[in-house]
Structures are given as structure tokens and as C-alpha cells.
Image (cartoon, rainbow, N blue to C red; front, side, top):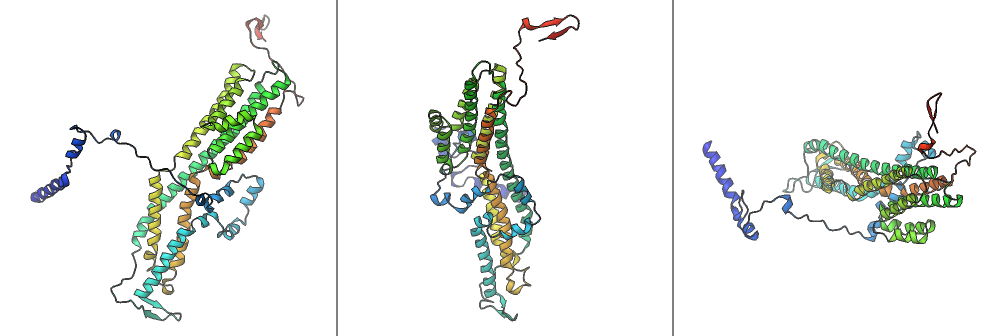
Length: 429
């Protein structure tokens, strides 16, 4: 046993020094290149290599998978919910299976695995035995030759199935969480745009200016609020899809100079948010109330940063690629594993539809995760922006007392206004 250990150690030491490479020290070439100074190979000494920028063609932009994303931007009302939970939803969904966007987008992958299954069935009929239409067995023309049948035991697929399932579940759940976070960001935008304009209207000191000036300031506040969410929508959308509409809307709703400044900015949402901050500062009100409105505007910056993180940082690419590779190999080799267990069918022909069905559902899960991973082009952001514009411009038209409610003006606090009632010892304002 001792001699065996010595032999293993000798072989390891010899292998570590092959081609001038040492297991525990840098090579001579590395030392010479560093001017005779030995440097550690830490992450600090390694330069980060950036991957090349993705290049897409016009065909990529207009592919069915990309074009169909706009039809998934659904905003539900009560009518849609009634249809969504109707008892005939199962039949309706099965009836539209072939026209499903998910199915169409993975048709090439499913066709590949089904073609492989068909080839394996035909190959094994040639190299093994086959049945004619009358059910009589015959030897294939290549049987008992050096050409083998193509089969695999089912056990490896059984062992890999739990791991593959976990990979797909994690991938799908992570993608849904990204979509959910993006939707919550826009939900916060919707809530705080209304909140900001409402506070601006309620806190506005109308005694300091004319009614015309007050309405002008509040309209400007509403437009600046809308311009931020519209600039954020453009910031998160593909240029070829939204650029022209974005410019058109800005010039229609904003003063020309303000719209042009936003369009020319390197980071358009930041410019729009700056305009909003100036509009808030111009409102005549107490500085404490003004700070409350600024806090609402700060939330917009947080939502923008969170959305930018989702857009620029996908699920780690190596995870997605490895999941896709494992799934592809599993499905491509699956016909070899199920050919034997499906031997009760005529010429093992059930291998083909089984492979087709399994490929559709498993590739479909991976496709769902991929479609959800980038959530902004399937969110109805334009619908959100249009509703925000309608709601906040209406809030800006509200005026104190326009509904018959009494409006009380409370004077500001000064020490001279505090009077004590000697009988009740209360502070009166």
C-alpha cells in the first residue's frame, strides 16, 4: 500500500511539471513577463472581458416572437375577469392551442426533436425488426450487420428528471418574480403620480396668486409628472417600437422647448424628473408641505432604478444557457430511452407522438420563463401612461370649495396668536 501511494505521488509530481508548468508556482515565462516579480493570480489582477454587444437584424425585430409580445399587454377589467374564469375556458384554450404564441415560437425546436424520434423509429426498423400492416414481424434489411440499433436504457432519463424539473421550476419562478417586481414598480408610479398632484393641489396657497396662475402651476405640475412616466416608458422600451410615438406625444402635450430638452437628454427620465422638481419648487406653499411632495417624487427615482436593474441584469446567462442545453440534450435523446418501453405499439410508432407532446410542454415551460424574464415589453406601459395622464390632469382641475364643501383658512402659527382662556386653561388659535 505504501509503494502504491509513492507511485501515485510520483506520477502527480511528474504530471505537474510537464511542459514547464508547476503545480504550486508560476511558470518561468510568467515570472519573466512580470519583470522577475511573482504576482498572485487574484481577481484584482484579472481584467474583466466584456462580451460583444448583441447585433440584431430587421428580421429579429419583426419575428413572430417579438411582434406577438404587444398582444400580451392586457389590462383587465371586470369583463375580462368574467371571461377569464368562465367554465368553458378549458375548451377555449385547447381550441386555440395551435394558434398559441408560445407554441408557434418553439415550433422549430419541437420539429427537431420529433424528426429525431421519427429517424430513430425508421432506423431501428431497418436494423432490427418491423411489422407490416398485417402485424406480421419481419427482419429489417440491416439486421445482424455491424450497424447497431439505436437505443438507451430509460434509467438515465429517470435519474435526470428531478434535476431538470427543479431547473425549470426555478427558472420559471425567477422570471415571474421579475415580472411581478416590474408590475409593482409601475403600480407605485400610478399611485404616487396621483398622490403627488393631489398634494400639490391641496397644499397650494391660492391666497398668494390669482386663480389663473394657480391653474397654470397645477397644470404644469401634472404635465411634468406625466412626462416623467412617459420618458420612463420610452427608456424601458425598444427604440424601434416607441421612439417616434414618444416624440409625437411630448410635442403634443408639452411646450416645445421643454419637450426638446427631454428628447435631447442623454438620460431622458432624469431630465423629466428635474423638470418635475422645479415645478414643485415653484408652487407657493409652506416648505414642509413642499418637502412631502418631493418625497413622493423621490419614489419615482427608486422605481426607475429598480426597473433599470431588471432590464440590464437578466437571470445569469450561464444558468439559462445550461438549462437550455440540458433540456435540449434530454429531449433529443429521449426517443432512444422510450423506444423500448413503447414496444407494444406498432413498430414502436408511439415514440413519435410521445416525444412531440413532451417536447411541447417542456420547451413551453422554458419559453414561458424566457418571455417573462424581460417584463417591460409585455407590460401595458402605454396604457398606464395614458391613464396616469387622464387621472392627474383631472385632479389638477379640482378646486377647494367647487363641490360646495366649506373651505377654512388656518392662519400660520405665531406666538402672538396664542391666547389662554383662564377659566379652562386651553390654548386657543
